[in-house]
Amino acid sequence: MGAVGLAGTGFLFCSSLRRPLGVSGYLRRLLNWKAEKAAELQEEKLVADQKAMREALLQATIKDLGDRLSPEQLAKLTAASAADKPCNDCKPSLRLPLTACLLFFLGVAVGGMWWAQWNGVWRVRWTLDPNYARLMGSGLQGYLVLLGGGFLVGWGTSMAGGCTSGHGLSGCSRFQPGSLAATVTFVGVGIVASLLMDALLG
Picture (cartoon, rainbow, N blue to C red):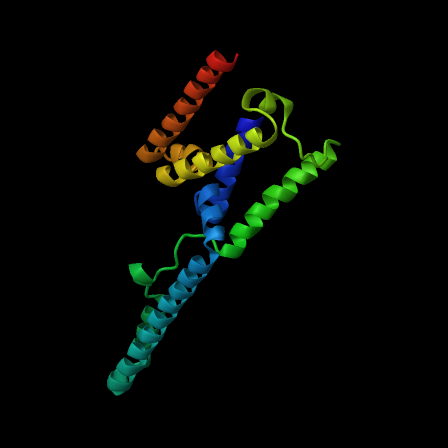
């Protein structure tokens, strides 16, 4: 059921928004919200400038040739200018707006809390899981290992250009070579690490 849910999430996300799902990318954008907001404003300015330029060129053409063009020709010229596609550098990007990224993470958190409440398992716990404490240690040691693991995951995600959602769900489903290689790498390393932990720690 988990696999079906993950596959369905990736498919519905991509088919409805026309964008690949990539959780680490959205998190990075939220953490760098100032730079992302500046980029969004720059994109909007480029599109607005190009639209204004097309309008100015249209008005100059009509002013210069208006008395020599029939009403039908003027209508065609106006329609062609309105249908003109933005240049590649001025197209709005495929990135989600920052507000959508924020809503995505709020939805993940609220959805998880709602599920836990619905199933009667909702509770705030400040202690580490007993199985984790048995393998990695408890107290300060356990938290330091957890913190170090988080840094390693973030570093690896940055190096690989994506995480399990971006590469494993979105990239592999589109047979992208980089995503296939990244997924094989992090799944393989996870298996090897698990076997080593089992051999060393029992």
